[in-house]
Image 1 (cartoon, rainbow, N blue to C red):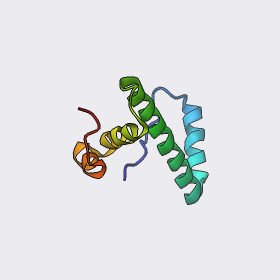
Image 2 (cartoon, rainbow, N blue to C red):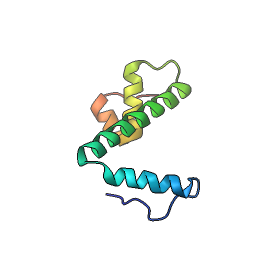
Image 3 (cartoon, rainbow, N blue to C red):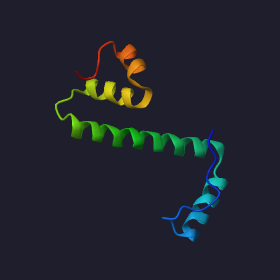
Image 4 (spheres, rainbow, N blue to C red):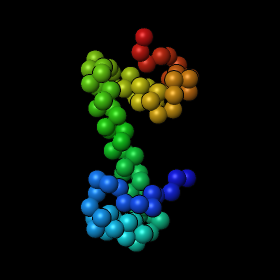
Length: 87
């Protein structure tokens, strides 16, 4: 598990970052888990949008396969889906 950086990011106002950290610390475990889940869904949506730019003709199944390749690597994704996502 990676820890949050101890210094504020250089692209964020220090007061904003302080409030953000305070909010994270005030969250329950369930709230943090739900927040992490939402971030994961958002990252996947951004990745799929990028795949669509690269491969506008890709079917929904091909999009899922390519996303799996990007997340888990070619070997595991190809084993799970049975065929390569692209030629």
